[in-house]
Image 1 (cartoon, rainbow, N blue to C red):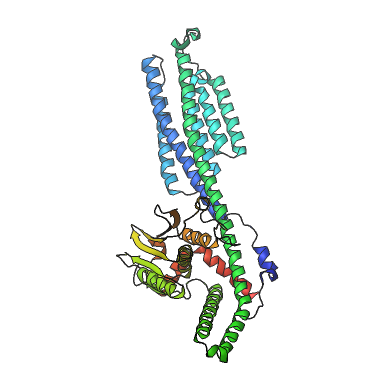
Image 2 (image 1 turned 90 degrees about the vertical axis):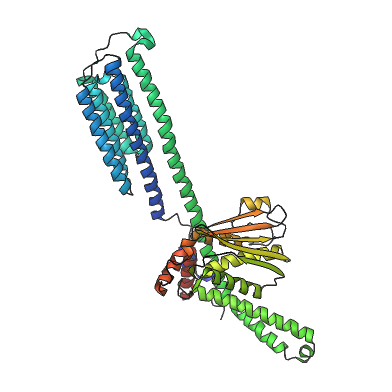
Length: 481
């Protein structure tokens, strides 16, 4: 390997890796979910309107003795019920809710309200102020142009009712205060408007806040994945750069073994052999980086089982680390098939390395399946995490080791786990030390059937870790430049 690759020599790649916003599809999914929730709120509001109108009509017609055209008004209510049932069935199947569809739903509500007011007194009906509810909902749910149209439509409906509506046969008794039926109707209308606005606007604002929070999380994940891609490019460049000095060291150490003052001293010869072993390990790690960068995911993966994968991982980790006391307990009962994946292997290895560094004397790994998840718990007897680190757990460059660039191991662990739908949590133990718990969904790391062929296995792995896939693709592009 020759030092022919430096990150500073790839301006095209660097320019291509500017900060990206979240993927348009992800934003569209958030908008669709928010639109569906808002449409559900309108459907619920419409059911309340149906019940409220039935109660109001009955009270006014039979309680107050004010004659209303019951047949026509109940016919309008029947149309509203049919429309609401159709909306409920339609929006259960559709994923996308557009501004036009929300606007149409509100226009239908305005039309039904106008018909009921026309049949029950026109502009003199105290419930005419329910138009304000439609306008406010439009201001929250619709685009500015649609909101302006909604204001114009409701204004025209109010004016039309004043021109063509038949006033209610109410006595001029406004001076009676709450004893006046008209004042009572206005009070009920005000209370109804206030209650509906508080209830449904709070829910709609909650939907919008959830969308904004998820969008912010997507932006954060996009920034972190961009950071991982940059780290991958730097790692592949460093692998090329370190190839030559490691090869030189291997040659020098090989020559030292044959020098008289080394070969005659068993202690020195043992130290040289250990140095050769560590240099060879460094070369193996760098070769793995370059090999991974040049492969698509799944091309070198092997079909295995969860227990075999973990047992082999622990055995290799023990063999290549200065482990003193390490307890490994595998309590998995149902050994499911999976594809051996380098990203998962490195993720678990990073956590074990951190535990070993924090507690060289002893550490342990406990593994079990909990419902539909694989749970890996790594514990140590070290000093534990600082409170500030626990609050920022998984963020890059959060480390207590005092090294520049520290904290990237846990950052990568959290991101790899998150891409397969898993979580990583950490806490300090009451008796001392710390525990890191990795929870991975079995559906994301296992194969559905034993007899799946290699193509299916490769496809399963491809879906398992998008971040690692992106890293390798970028690194491969750089190698070819």
